[in-house]
Every structure is written in structure tokens, then in C-alpha cells.
Figure 1 (cartoon, rainbow, N blue to C red):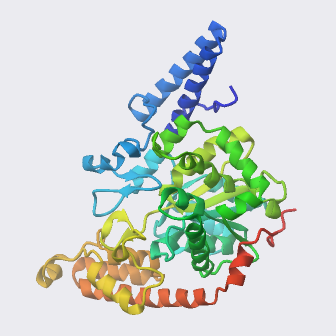
Figure 2: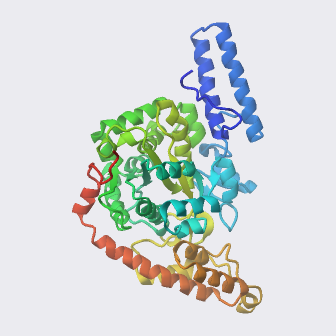
Figure 3: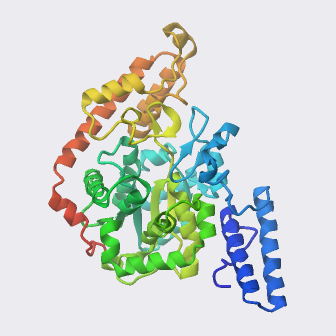
Length: 476
């Protein structure tokens, strides 16, 4: 029975119940195949029925093996079409909504079974760090969490934790949206003074995209330069390519194999929507993204310690990986990783989709010139303004759907100035052209400064960040 998580069914999340049903179903099949005693089989079947009843009570519908909670249907079966029924669709590869305001994040919290980052938690972070909360916390850019209070408990008791985030390097140039988790992770590293590991999933991109192994690794190194340019402390940060590190680290690979043993194919299909035509590399990949959540995957940093808590800042579309990880962790003797989830950075064309690195006009790239930034914002940024100046002056603009205003909430540091812009635009005192001008004046220096910092990142610096080594943090 070791493979079935022992859940208190009343407080288990729908996903945990879903995974438990899959695991218990496997157990019933194994008992029948092994011609076990009738009493033992009956007991296992009763447990399966009980889990299914708990699932129906929690989700409101019967358990279906290929339809996990939170995903309307597996991806291979037209999952994203769920938006036609007014439902948002979110998984690690697809984000769709029919609303111009973007994803309904309150609904997503309920579906994913996470917790809202409320004022109380933000105040607690401020007390623990002695620093003003980052604008991403103040403005709800990071809006959801799992076990952040547990991390703060440990920190206040002088127990260590570490940060883990990552990047899937699918192209040479990164865009503004890719910076969000790294800007916030750098702040977390600074205020908590903790080590950080950054996973470059070049193996994932090789499996999912039409890339060679050399291309995928090359993108990982180029993207690492942009990440380093965010200002991470070289003495406390290890960046690694999966293609390079996994072959050189037995401890990391052992954790990958442990995780793989505790996730069935049924569960992987349920969580990620894999189909029978997906290559086996894709099916086994989630264990590789899960492994950095456990401290002994990095013996050069943590020696053989297995109890150092991990905190993962990421966009909420990555949550399925870590729901799986949190389900497996106690079964292999490790602490569950904690998470901080961010909203999606909207495409210039509007908040219905994520930005795409493959569509140059959907994004502001970190390589764009001042002129390109100005042209893209003026030409492509979706406006919440009215059709005529007269109407706009009379009725005002809609900040909820205006992409230029959304971008300012991410990048304009001054809360008072942002609130003034919101009032002026909503009342009609500020026109769309003026709002776009305000955004351009924020983005041009931000990108130019990033480009200047990136120029300073030499191949030697990248190599140093990517060399497995002890980080300057004392875990005694």
C-alpha cells in the first residue's frame, strides 16, 4: 500500500484525490492479477469506492481517468476549446481565456486548490524581512501560494530554505514576460539572503520543439546571460542546463528515478494531458522538473541534507508539475516544496493569451531598440480607450482591459503615480496616446539598462554561474 498516499479525504485537494484514485485503481488491478485473498481485494475495492465518493463530493462530478480536476479535458482531446463554454484553460503549454480582462485568477485558485496571497501574508513577509513588499506582491502580480507560511515559520526559527525557479529556453531572445519570475526571485534572494538554483530545461525544449540538442543547449546559455543580467548574486546562485547537469550528478538523477517510480502513466496522463502518441521523453520529463525541489539533488550546495525547504516562484501554468511533486514528496521522505504563483504577462494584443516568443509583435523583446519599443506599443498595444476623443473624455477608458496600463502595473515602481494614471485614464482626463507615452517612457530605459548589463556578461561569467560548486551560505 506504500504507493497510495494516505490522505485525510476531507482535507485532500481534488488533484490529490484524483491521484489517489488512480493509484488505488492500480493497486486493485495488481491484487486481482496476483490472485490475492478475497478479503484483501474487497478492502481495496471499498477504499477505491470511498475515494471516488469523496472526489464526487469535492468536484461535483464523477471521477474520469482521463479528465483531472481543473482541466476540462486532456489536451489531445481539444482541451483549449473549453474557452468556448466561457471556461479558462491553463496548463504548462496552453493558456486561453475568452475574457478581455484575462484569466479569472480567483477561480483558478479554487480549481488548483492553492491559497490566495492576502494582506496578512504580505504583512508577515514585510515583518520577517524588514523590507517593503515588492510591487509584484503589493499589486497582486504574485497572487497565490502553497505553504508560504511554513517557509516563514522556518525562516523566523533560523532554519534554512532555498529558492528554485527555471526557464524553458525555446528561443535566443527572451521577452518582458519571461523576466517576471526572475525580477521577483532576485528580490526574494536579496531580502531573505538565501541560495538559488535555476533550471534551464533545454531537454524539455528538445522534446517539445523542432530543435537539435545543440540548439537547445545554445539557447540555454544565451538565456542564462539575460537571467544573470537581472543581477543575481554569483556567490549564491547556481544555473544549470538539464542536458549538462543530469549526466554529471548522480544525486540529481537518483531523485529523478525516485520520482518516476512514484508517478504512474495514468497519473501523468491525468495531470498533463499526455496521449498515447506522445514520445516517452515527454511522459518522463515532469520528474526532471520536480527533482530540483529536493535539496539533496545539489550535494555541492547542501551536502546530503534532505530537509532543506524549497520555495518556487513561478507562473501559475507551471503548477501541475509541482502539484505532482508535492504529492510524491512525502512518499519518498522529502518535504513538500512551497510555491508562489504569478499571473500571466499579457500579450500586446490583449490578455486573452500569454505572450509568444514566436510572434515578434505579441511581445516586447529584451533585444528591442527604443524605436521598436515605441512602434510596438503605439501600433499593437490593445487599448481600453473609446472610439473617439469626445467619447473618451466623456466616459473614460477601461484600465481592466488596457494592455499599456497592465504593463505599467508590472513595471512602474511608484504606487501613487500608477494610481493617478488609473484615475486620469478612467475619468477620461488622460487619452490612450498619453497612456502609451507613459508606458514607453518606463520601458525604454528599463530595456536599455538590461541590454547594458547583459553586454557585461562574458562567457566566463556564465561558466562560473553554471559550474556546480558550494554557494556562500552556511547550512550548519
